[in-house]
Length: 285
Image 1 (cartoon, rainbow, N blue to C red):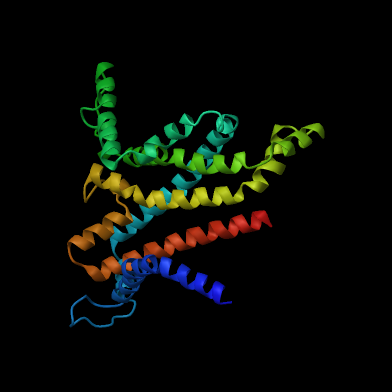
Image 2: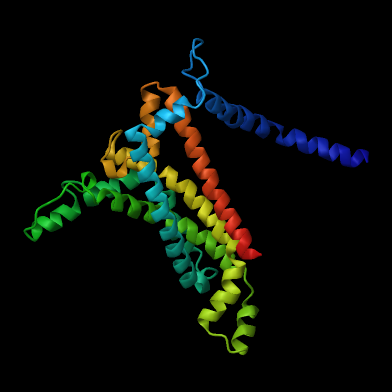
């Protein structure tokens, strides 16, 4: 018993620095944000105002615009990246173990620095970018793409280009783990490609799909960095996201609204992740 107790103690000592770091930099600040969302400010004279900050948010046109754009971005971007990455993973399944360079190529957009992604967007869609030069070559009028209604589609394309490869790697790891003999047995029984996909591949891929969805959700909110560098603090109305609203309130020291918006953003992430986890559990059952 003493031997196991010593191992437990040593294990706790090893993880103690990490746990203290998480407590100091994540857990405590999180509860502070929740507390400030119910306060009138951060000074000593601040008072408890209940849900007034949340009511103000609901009546704030800029917050509603940011929430609508962010929700639309998630509803469009997440299904697109899952379908696209799943299709690419299926096509590359037989090549995954043969070409290690393939994984490096898929991860290249994901590891590219944010500035590099922004430079690529400017190269293509700036006023003097390649797309406008091509239009001018054919005698067509150039367009300010990032200030037009096309800006949202450009941001979606940037999100897909940057993060699809990472999702493909996650899904490929699930695909190659399925034994080939299962497909061989199904083929002997006369199963076609669609039947093998529905009855063999899909039932064993739900966990991989869940992790791909979870990481895609996190990366969707990280896409704000590129949007911020492309459009600035106040971009066009089509790409004004919740992160813009939070960042602008931080710069104006409006910590009550900032905290309330952060709590709502956290709740949205938890709800989406919970729905995905429940959905995966139902499919596996």
